[in-house]
Length: 101
Image (tube, rainbow, N blue to C red; front, side):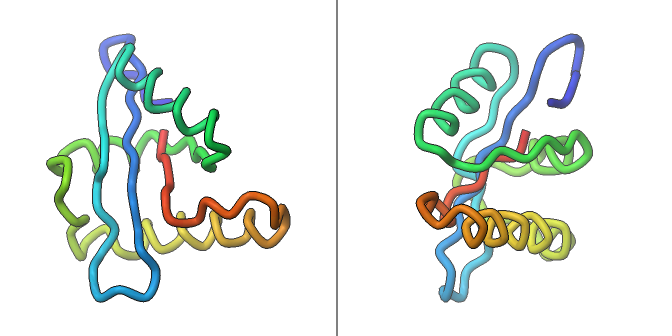
């Protein structure tokens, strides 16, 4: 989790595979909001990736907006990690929502 003034941060992404759209930021927050985002992900068995640097970059994007092209590579690596998890644990089919913590 990213430490920012002693507060945790979280960012949620959504990607609809096969579309011509980039992943979108669906939620972001610090402190108790971040804790709620993380708790919701855990409840739904959505993979959580702890990456302070990525969270710091994604926090700059407004909720509902697509990620910029400059982040495509790093987010593609994140999605590849999620796809790998889903192949290893097929009962977890939540590949369209990714939480980055």
